[in-house]
Image 1 (cartoon, rainbow, N blue to C red):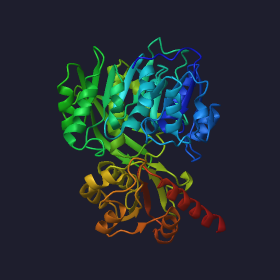
Image 2 (cartoon, one colour; image 1 turned 30 degrees about the horizontal axis):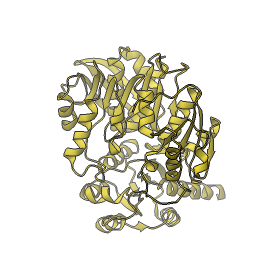
Image 3 (spheres, helix red, strand yellow; image 1 turned 180 degrees about the horizontal axis):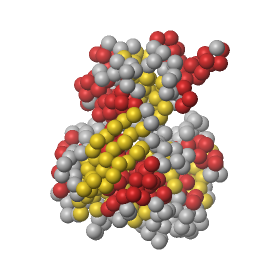
Amino acid sequence: MHMVFRKNAKIWMVGIKGAGMAGLAQILKGLGYRVQGSDTKEKFYTDAILKRLGISVLERFSPKNVRGADFVVASNAYMQGPRTRDKGSGYGEVREAKRRSIPVLSYPEAVGELFNNSFGIAVAGTHGKSTTAAMIGVMLEKLGADPTALIGAEVLNWESNARVTKHSTLSTKPYFVLEADEYKNAFLHYQPNMIVLTNVEWDHPDVFPSFAKYAWAFKKFIGRLKTRGIIIVPRDNRVAWRVAQQQQHKVFSFGKHPRSVVRVANITVGPRGTLFSVFFNKKRLGAVTLQLFGEHHAYNAVAAIACGLALGYPFLHIKKALKTFQGTRRRFEILSPHRFVPHTLSPVVIDDYAHHPTEIAVTIRAARQAFPRRPVHILFQPHTFSRTQALFRDFVKALHLADRVYILTTYGSARERKGKIGSRELAKTLRAPHFATHQEAAQVLRNILPQNAILLAVGAGDQWRVAQKLLNMMQGTRRKR
C-alpha cells in the first residue's frame, strides 16, 4: 500500500495506548497531523506520554468516533476481528471506517508510510531489539543527527518510546530508527536502508509453527533492503549469519567471534554498570562504559557501535554518546529506590520483560554479575500458552538457574485465552509455588523473601504489578520503623 498522509490530515487511532501506537501518535503529531484516538480504560504507561503531548484519548470504542477522520490507523489487534454486531469495540470502529470509505491502515502499514520515505534503520531479531534500537536512537541524537525513532519500550533518556525529528517533514531523508517486529510478519511492510539484526532464535510458535518458517521470515525481511543497503549482523549467531550471507548486500558483522568486523571482548559487569573493549578489524579502538548491567547489554551496544561506524561516525564520539544511555523501561529496571541498593538490608526488586528462555537465562546471569554473593529469586509469568508449550523444556532449564522460582498464572492474550500447557504445569515441574493473583504473590513474597535476595519479576505480561505491590509493602514497613 502506498498512501501518503496529506498535510494537516485528521488521523484517528484505534488502540492508541499500545506502545507502538502511542509512539506513532507522537511522531504523527510532531509532523503536523491532527491526532486523536480511542482505547480501553485500562491504565498503560503511555497514558502519561499521550497526556503530556496533548493527544486526546477517548477511553471507549464507538463507531461514532471515526466520523470526520481523514485516515484511520488501527492496532493489528483490531484489524481482523469476529464478525459480530458489537459496535463497542475497536473492531466496530474499523468496520465503520471502511463502511464510510475512510482509508484504514494497520499499525505497520502506517509506520511503513513514514519509515520507507526516510533513511530507515530497522532493528530486528528475537532478543534485544528494544534496547539496541533505543541505544542507536540516543546515540544518533547525541551525535547531532536528529533522528526520528519508534521503539517498543519507553526510553528513559526521552521519557517516551518515540522521538521526532525537528525537521517539519521526513522528506529531507533524516534517520528513522525503528524497532521492527517480526510478529505476523509486520516487518515485511518496511523497506530499510540498514538492518541491524540482533539474533535469530525460534519464537512466536502461534504464528511460526517451526524454526524454519521463523527464519524464512527474516530472510524475506532482509530481501526488502533498499539498493546499496547494509546489514549489521551477529557473527556468533549461526542462523542470522547464514541468512545474511544469502543476500546481495554489504554485510557488517559484530559480536564475540574472532572474525567479527566489530568485536566485543573483556566484558566486566560490576555494581556501577558494564565495561568492555571494542575492536575494529582486529585493531583495538578502546573501552566503552555503560550504565546498564549484563553481558547482553555489551552485546547490544556493540551492535549499536557497528551501526555508528557503518554510518561514518568516529568511535570516540560513539563511545561518549553511549555512556549517556540510561536504558529502557522494564529491561533490568531496578524498582527499589537506588539509595537502598548498594548496601541494602531489604530485597532488591528488578522488573524485566524477559519472556523467552534465552532472555530469562541472560537476565539471571546479569543479576548474579551485578549483585554477586546474593541469592537470586525469580517470579515468572508465562506469556501465551503456545510459547510455554513449544519451549517448555527450555523454560524449565532457564528457570533452574535461579536459587528460587515462583510462578504467576499465565498471561493469556486476546488471541489465545487457554491452552494445554500453562503456568500450573510449569510450577509443578519446577516444584515451585504457583500464584493465582497479584495480591497473593506480593503477600507471600513479602513474608518469605530473604533480606539479601534479588527478586527478578520477569515476563511480557503484568507481573510488574506484583513487583510494585511488593515494593510498596516493603517501603511501608520501612516507614513504620
